[in-house]
Image (cartoon, rainbow, N blue to C red; front, side, top):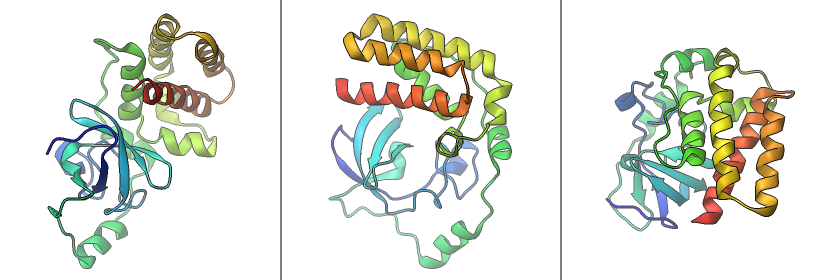
Length: 202
């Protein structure tokens, strides 16, 4: 099924195992405890086999197209209450365990450095959203700090070339903050800024 920006959809399945994750997880990490099957959302933008959603509760979420169904479609992959209960009762991996299952990949942008950096961060550090919200240290992030900062610099330089006015100032301030204070929170703010600007430009 082809999906488009602005389309209303339902998360109908989780395909974590297809990408080497646990069966209670989604393809791009995150679990059914965080976002239950059947959650409704609107498509913010698509990129290859990755779709960024805005859930009804306002949160952003990445999914594989095969995990979605059209809100208007009757093509539902059903899951009975027993199966769902089994998924929810499983132990969700700690961040370090989840990180070990996430294959490390270098940041190698090909076109839109700024947006590709945000996607790379979400893929490589799937628990960033949790640590960002709590303001806690993220050990996997700190271990790869040099790599993360090198990528952030490239994304920032791209942002300066492709934005103007207040947006450019926002990127400048956010980039400076990454190297100061709480890395999880400040990097999370930087990535959120990239995603917000991307949505506004579409």
